[in-house]
Length: 132
Image 1: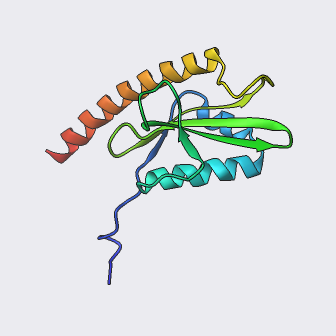
Image 2: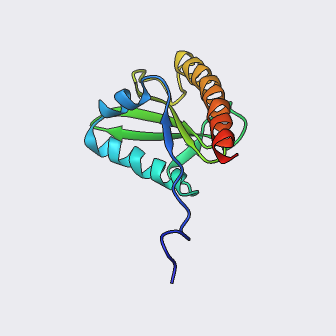
């Protein structure tokens, strides 16, 4: 029998910038889809519909794309840092031309990824200090 203490704990989710508030503005079905993908990331898995975001060097930055009522919603998160999931951005894609993520949104994701790295380094220092 596996006790609660033996079960791996889910990784915490950290929200960068306005990502949490932005996600709360999405339709409930889209929020649920993103939530399932984040839970999968928290427990070390990956939702089948979460795809690596191009231009970020592999599968460390993932994107959930969901269409709802003719609109497209995207949420971007990273599992690049051990022990934590950072939600970098959540937005509604406005452009009807193609599936390419607009440059302004990519730039925002890059800035927030840099901020996530800084927060992770500070968080790691705090964890190491507590464990001494």
